[in-house]
Length: 147
Image (tube, rainbow, N blue to C red; front, side):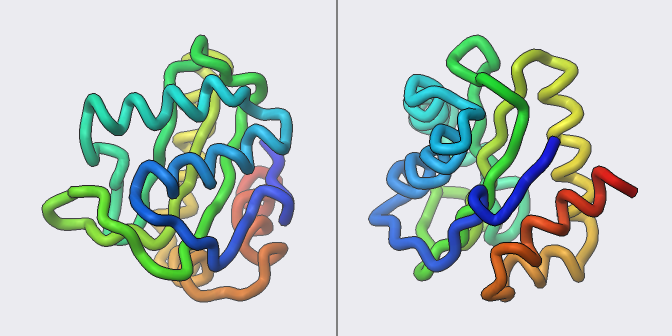
């Protein structure tokens, strides 16, 4: 899995959680990693299942089933200019939305493993939350894959 600065958008403006999920999903669509249907499926999953996607304080990880339009495995990083509420009792509000796509169960698990490794590093989380350099944020994921 590779991620570059085109998959990182900083200081985006979202009206609410669904808008934030759509903006994040558009990064995957623009990179050819998911279809527009996949973005709709992520929003539907959030509507039906609630804020389970808020996996840590300030961080949401929306996703959908592979058969709902995942084209290639991957993630993107959307950082919001103003946090939005997803409805999670402890981890709201959300400042970073990291959508993921996996083309099958194995790819989905591999993407989750990469993301978990990055998010378990407090320094990496600080970089994601505070850096103004999209390349630096992307490199957190690329470096992990290489090494």
